[in-house]
Every structure is written in C-alpha cells, then in structure tokens.
Amino acid sequence: MDNQSSGIRVNSIDALRAISIFGMIFSAAIGYGSGLPQWMFHCQVPPPSFVFTPELRGITWVDLVFPFFLFSMGAVFPFSIGRKLRSARGNLSVSLSIIRRGVILMAFAVAVGNMNVVPGAGSWGAVYSFVMWLFLFAALLRTSHQWVNYAGWGVVVLMTALQKPLLGIPFKFGNFDVILELLAVASVLGGLIYQYTSENPRLRALFVLLVAALKMLGFDFTQYLVIVLSASIIGDVIRTKTQGGLCDGKSGLPALLALAEVPVMLWSFFTRNVLIGFGISFALAVAFALLTLRSRSAFSIVGWIGFGMLLAGTGFDPIDGGIAKDYCNLSYLFSTCGMAALTLCFLMWVESRGALSRNLVYAGQNPMVAYTIPWTVVSPLLYAVGLLGWLDGICIGSPVLGLCRGLVVTLPMMALTCLLSWKKIYLRS
Image 1 (cartoon, rainbow, N blue to C red):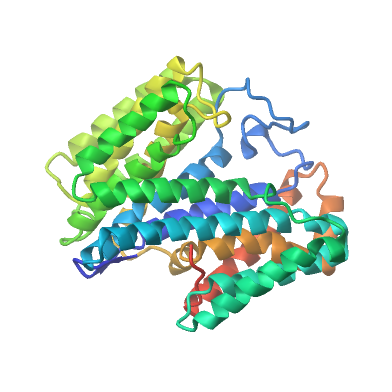
Image 2 (image 1 turned 45 degrees about the vertical axis):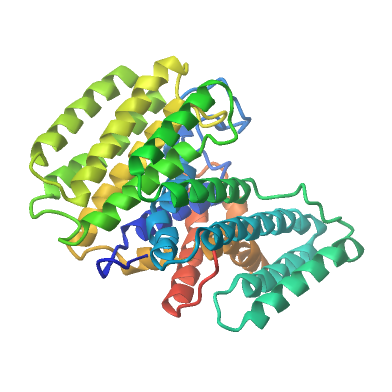
C-alpha cells in the first residue's frame, strides 16, 4: 500500500493480513485428532467431536483470523479506492471498479468452492483442481497483457463445462467458498460506502452505528461492515497522519500494552472471566491513554480506537448472552475489530523501528495466492510424496506432531507466496 499523498509506504496492514492468513491456514491444517487443547480450534467446534455447538460462548485465537482479514481489507480502502478518487476519476468509474472487483471475487469464490469438491474424484480430481488453479492464476494475474487474463478465464469456463464429463461431478454455482463470498459482499458494500463518505469519516461512523442497529434487529446481511467500515476510518487516520512518521519517539511501552490486551481478552472471553478481563482492559486502556496523552500520531489514535472498540465489545458480551463467532453477535464484531486495531498498533510501532519482517509483508501482499495454494498446490504435492499421509498416521494423539502437520502445510504456502511477491507477481484481490 502506498500513501500517495505523503510518499510514505505503510506495510503494517500487509503484515496484519499475513498474520491472519497464516492463522487461517495453520488452524485448518493442524492434526484434528492429535489431542490439541480446545483453544487451538474454533471455540464452538471443540474437540474431540468437532461438532458445531452454537450454544457455546467464547472465542479462541482461531476466531480472530477472519475478522483480522476483514479489518485488513477495510483499512486499505483509503489507499486503494482513495487513490482512484484522488486521481480525479469520475464517481461512476470508481463505483464500477468497486463492483467489478466484487464480481471477480465472487466468481473466484464459486471456482474455489468447486475446486474444493472435485478432489473427491480421486487423484484425477486433484490434478483437475491444480490445473484449474493455474488458469485462475492467469485470469487474475496483474499484467499489462490482458490477453493472458482473457485466456485464463476462457479456459476456466471451458473446464467448468467439462467438469461433469471428466470427473462425474457437476459444476454448481451453489458450491462457493463461504469466506470469499463474504469478502466479496463486504468489499462491494464497504467500498461503495467508503467512496461516498471518503471526505466525511464521521458520517461513516454513523453507518457503523446503523449497521450495528440493524444487527440488533436481526438483519445479518451487512453485519461485517461493522469491522470493514471501522477499519476504513483507521486507514484514513494512518493515511493522513503519517507525514511525521507512524509513531512518536516513546511508543514502546504503549505498543506493548496494546499487544498485551489481545491475549488478556482472549483468555477472559474463552474462560468466561469477562468481568476480570474488562477490569484489566480498562486499566490497560487508561495506562495507554496516559502514556499517549500528548500525542496525535497515527499510532496513538489507532490505539485509542482499538481500546474503545474492545471495551464496547466487552460491554455487549452480557447483552448478547456471551460472545460468539457463529452466529456472530455485536460483542464479537466490536471486540475482534478492537483486537485487530491493537495488533495493528503494535505492528506500526515495529515498522517505525525498521524491524518489521519483509517476508511477513510479502506474504500479506498476495492474499488470494496465500489462501488457495495450500489446498490446490501444497497439500496435493505433499500427499503425492507421502509426507502428509505419513503425518496423518502418526500425529494421532500427539499434540506436537499435530502442530508439525500444520506447519508442514503453512510454511511452504508462506514461502511460495513470498517468492511470488518478491518477483512482483500478484493476483488481483
């Protein structure tokens, strides 16, 4: 992301996106029968049965990965959509580009959803899925040679038509990747709202309150805009406040307080010691505010917003009958958004000291690659050489080997994604 107005490159949001992607893939790839504790899985899908239990209340770190990704998407609106608005494009042109992006993401969601089904056809299904991914890669590749994109889409359409004759499994538009579908909806609605409130963040904050009110009335379709629009306000702060640097000189202790808040609240939500967590959070928030009282840096404002949203989410916990990811409630939306902001706050401090991992930034710059290659490239290859099959057999009852299984899938994904970003090979996302 480039801050065009100030010439400062902000990598913290890319790093946050990479963390969310790593967590998303790692949590899905660990050994589910390895005896790992409940807090290593979605709170409402606990071991050993892994049956979805909506009555359970609480969250684990796994329940943060999707809202962190949503937050990252919203936080770049001022850099991506904002850059188009500042380039004097007409409103209609910008709106159409937002809608086009959403349509492409939805098409990608349908393609990936069907790719997730065809491995059931055996080894040929895995080959088909891999070839489909290669041509989807071509279809979404950022290149000046548009014929590459058109050829990619053409072959993808042809392969969908031949899927049933070749594999006996029909292509269905109902087979879509849920996460990508939610991202598509949020990107269009959030992007359009950002476009027409780009000069008025306070009006956008009112939209956040409106979405929250609709959620309380049972309208769930727009619920994730609480995170996306709030993140876009934080993105505005970062874009407009970085002329003098991301942080003030003495931001180390406040940054550690911001980071400490995340595991504290995860513990309190998971163990249901919410009142204790609220007390500790309030104390940390006061300490952060006192340490940054005279500061007006992006770092300080992002921290204030993060603590405020997390405290609000904690306040909603008893109203909602306990925080829950599925079916998600306001406590979940506000709390996870606050945790994302506080994590970003810490990453901004790390970046200001020149200590942010370049590989982490690279991994976050290619999210569609990182999200799809574990299941279409890495896992099939590891099964083909026998490594994953061997791990599946020996990790039963072994938490250490269960973690190793997750790393065996996730680390190659990160490496391949970093390599493509390093070579400046990106997918539109």
